[in-house]
Length: 161
Image 1 (cartoon, rainbow, N blue to C red):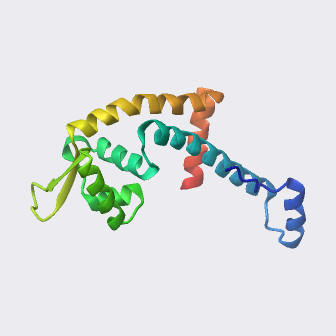
Image 2 (image 1 turned 90 degrees about the vertical axis):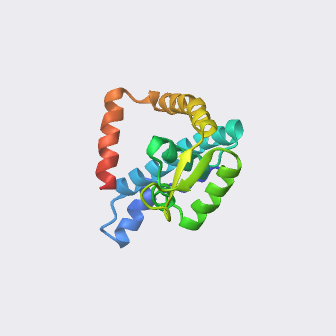
Image 3 (image 1 turned 120 degrees about the horizontal axis):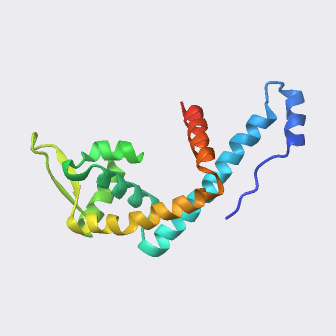
């Protein structure tokens, strides 16, 4: 679904007459970033859903677990990194464990704590889907030169700080 919600520069200028602190260029820049981000994210998520039957949450969860390798990750830390509640991550992990993608085991240093690891099947799955995923992302960014990509990274980090 395409949303058309970016105002014109003239419209923003009219609002600026009422609230002088409005910066039309800043508003347009931020809305353009949001619009581009949504389009890119949706194109990526469509492929993950269609080809691998992965929701955004499941993909992000598997990716974080994959990044933690053999040491694994505590469910609470995983929930924090993925940006979901502990209850949500618990439900996701139960389904992933049932599907043979993850193991949830007691932590070595504290038997009451849990640690999540990818199973061999889960690791193989991630090794299968990540290279083409990163290739798709790379191709999306080919519209910018490498120098422009690096500049964009710095600008977005500056905005996020």
